[in-house]
Structure formats: C-alpha cells, structure tokens
Image 1: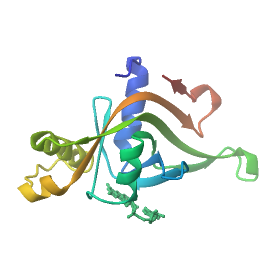
Image 2: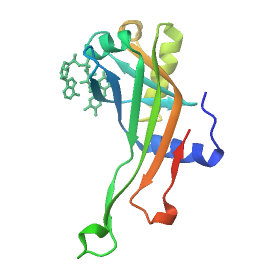
Image 3: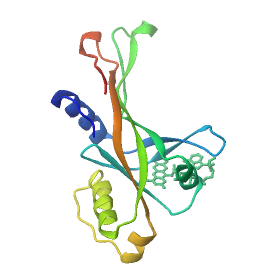
Length: 163
Ligand SMILES: Cc1cc2nc3c(=O)[nH]c(=O)nc-3n(C[C@H](O)[C@H](O)[C@H](O)COP(=O)(O)OP(=O)(O)OC[C@H]3O[C@@H](n4cnc5c(N)ncnc54)[C@H](O)[C@@H]3O)c2cc1C
C-alpha cells in the first residue's frame, strides 16, 4: 500500500482521474520492453485493467507480472513569448505507477473491477452477462511505487513527488 501525503495523493488522483487511457509497460518474452495503451479504472491505490483472455501481453505477464503504468493528462501548448522557441512548453501532468498484475478470477470481484473501469468513463450503472464476466481477463495492480510530475508551468508551481 502506498503511503503519501494528502496533497500528493490529491495531485496523483486528480491527474489519473482526468485520463482516458494509460500506457502499460511490461517485459516481453525476450526480456525487452513492451508497452501498450489501455483503458483503465482506478480506486484506492489500485489500477484495474481488462482484456481478452489471450494475447501477447497475457503471456508476458504470466512470466513476469511486473508493470510500469504511465498516465498523462491532456496536454496544452503554452509559451511566454511567441517569438522565442525555448519559452514554449507543453503543459501536462504525468504519473508513473509500478506494481504487479494479479489476474482476478472471482466472479463478483471481476464485476466490481469492471464497475471501477466503467466509472472512469461514465456515471451510468451497468449489468454484465455471465459469459461476458467469465470471458474477460481482469488485471488488478496494487500500486507499490508512484511518482508524479507537473510539466510546463512556471518553476515555482512545478512539483515532483516520488514515493
Ligand atoms: C486508446 C486505446 C485503449 C485501449 N484499451 C484497451 C483495453 O482496455 N484492453 C485491451 O485489451 N486492449 C486495449 N487496447 C488495445 C491494446 O493496446 C492492445 O493492442 C491489445 O491489448 C492487444 O495487446 P497484446 O499484447 O495481446 O497484443 P497481440 O494482440 O498479441 O498483438 C501482436 C502484436 O501486435 C502489435 N500490437 C499489439 N497491440 C498494439 C497496439 N496497441 N499498437 C501497436 N501495435 C500493437 C505488437 O507488435 C504485438 O506484439 C487499447 C488501445 C488503444 C489505442
């Protein structure tokens, strides 16, 4: 479980809450990095992901469950002086989380995870058919380490957190 201050937690949760996708990095069968974009849900220092039951990533994670998940909010181009190239900045907040993927097998826990994922995108409530729940692969990542940075703002307003 991550131990961070309330202010750090708020910045991290606000940034993750604004994202529509994340980038999940893992180690492939040759020991090389492999990163895929994924939709996600987040609740209480845990990231939930879902996928089909087969695919390269599933095989990689069965061999090595360690993942590095990066989130980046929508970015905005800003500048202090339109004529000066080095005054241009891309404003955005990014969060990097590390942890291990555990595949959720329990039916009810899968439904809860799917609800967390859906709540990232909509306030609507959903029902899922039994085969849909049985066939989906649900990935649960309890965050073990997290860092956040805010980019493209004046130096005094920039932040960096590492835990
Ligand atoms: C915005 C966004 C959100 C997504 N959300 C999800 C999600 O929530 N769940 C989910 O399962 N998938 C999601 N995807 C698709 C995901 O990125 C992967 O393509 C998918 O999970 C299959 O991955 P795999 O490792 O099983 O690849 P495989 O299907 O085994 O693919 C074989 C090969 O195809 C290439 N490949 C695979 N995926 C990609 C890719 N995204 N871009 C370029 N090349 C690729 C790689 O070289 C890979 O080795 C999302 C994609 C996008 C763009």
